[in-house]
Amino acid sequence: MKKIYFLLIIAIIGMQHIDAQFLKNAKKLLNSDNKGLTEKDAADGIKEALVNGTGQSVKLVSVIDGYWGNPEIKIPFPPEAKEMESKLRAIGMGKKVDEFNKSMNRGAEKAAAEAKPIFVAAIKGMTVRDAVNIVKGTDNAATLYLKNTTSPELISKFQPIIKTSLDEVDATRYWSDLITAYNKIPLVKKMNPDLTLYVTQKAIDGLFIMIAKEELKIRKDPMARTSELLKKVFGS
Figure 1 (cartoon, rainbow, N blue to C red):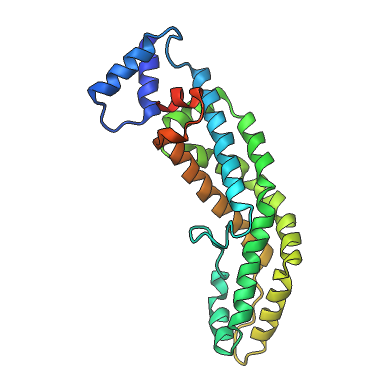
Figure 2: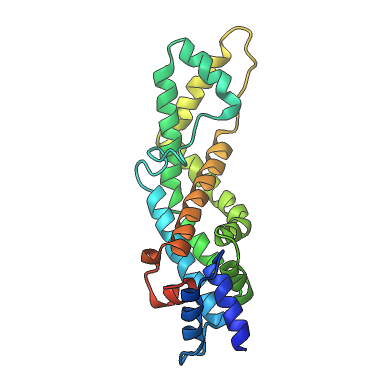
């Protein structure tokens, strides 16, 4: 049994090279009163880490400039409409384009807070085996698990909220004005991409980028392990 615990601890710490000090610490844990790290410890630890990490990620993006002010997740002009952007800027509508771009990000920021209960429900439904596999997995294993288990619900939940948010921040009006102006330009191919779907997907993509950063922080940075359980699971 101790051999199993020892192998699990090695996998959790994720060391590429196991040095003498690490082996000493691992043996100390195995010989302690709690008989080493159990699968329940691993499950409870990853759930705590995920609740903390997703909560912090949602908090970071669901404020003014959460998306717009972060180059990593800032939502750009729809890529299929890049030609439209260029032509509109060329005819002096650059300010309108910028206003629309900012309003898309404001819509995402307003909607992002709705993700937290979806993540919490997915985390609570996680099995012990799921949690152990995540702890033993790659640096983004938890993020990938959440992405696979929550994306359909996030899209379904986000789309109406994004639509309302885009209306509230005038993104829909800006988009309509831009589309109308562009489609009046001679010889251009008429277009009208689904703005709500585009912003929804980009908002979710940005959220998972931030969750991956929080996960890596907990795995790699001792200062990010804010409880004894997290220290035990991911190393002190």
